[in-house]
Image 1 (tube, helix red, strand yellow):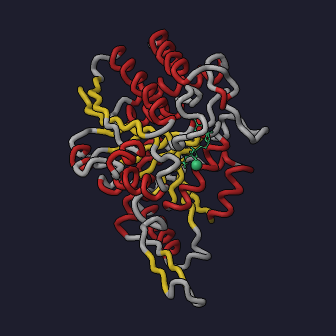
Image 2 (tube, rainbow, N blue to C red):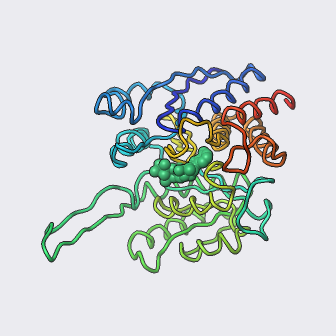
Image 3 (tube, rainbow, N blue to C red):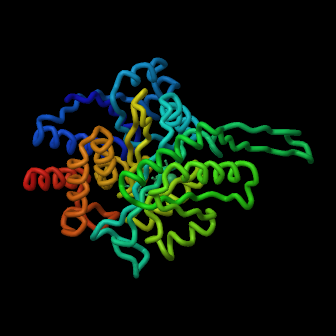
Length: 355
Ligand code: ATP
Ligand code: MG
């Protein structure tokens, strides 16, 4: 089957790492002719903005809607304000295509650096399901009495029943399929509308999934437990803001930004889903072949999984783990001296040798 993939390398190291992701997916196609990709590159991002005043073409969303998936490097660069690059491309795509599920694996592979000295890969193996379309990032609020002494700013959190139910249900379904426990992270004691509502819906849905073991933690306690007892978490479901923060914490305990991937899913497939490494464009190291492409390879694995190629998805993770254990072909962030492209080549070599 041929999957049409829109490739948006974006800015900075995004351009370098996405090359390696495409290289690896092409290798999968070579090894397994049943899996074919047709890649179309789009030159959108901050350079495009500096030439046109836009982060993407006006008909960009319409053009992307014809694809089966989107593979994104990173967007944002000094000189273009963050809110322009973010809202002009990344958030626009997420919202237009109702990619309401953000899946972020927090899995410590063998050989990956972990700051928690007494923890091992068996202790850190979770999947975060973050609400990706509303909540604290709904973007609504008001600014009252601007520049007056009684100035007040209100930032709304928007939690709809449909929005909460669909993300929590997605997490329950995943927990059921994977035969893992599900933990909800919220803050019902302080956020007396939104999180009480969230907790209520979690409780209601749990009645439909008596086979799934559930836990519920306040976000502050959860942050502490992710450090002291990460083994308590398997599948985790949480709101947009809490998920944003906790998955960065997750990246830190599972090997760092160079290994952290994220999928933005529209599970029903009404619109394309998007796969990306969660790091930014890292201008400090851009253009020097210093960037670690393994997060992008991991997001390529998520792409394969989403299209139903579970076995190949796992093989890509095996390849990453092999490189981490071998410690021979790693970029400087993981203590090595290899170039970005060398790491991509090493993943390809592993796949060619083993499958
Ligand atoms: P953003 O503002 O979008 O978060 P950023 O430029 O701040 O982007 P981050 O992704 O937050 O970049 O990363 C912070 C730093 O971590 C980078 O400046 C870089 O030094 C390092 N880093 C991030 N990703 C990688 C990577 N893939 N390989 C190596 N180093 C990385
Ligand atoms: Mg950053």
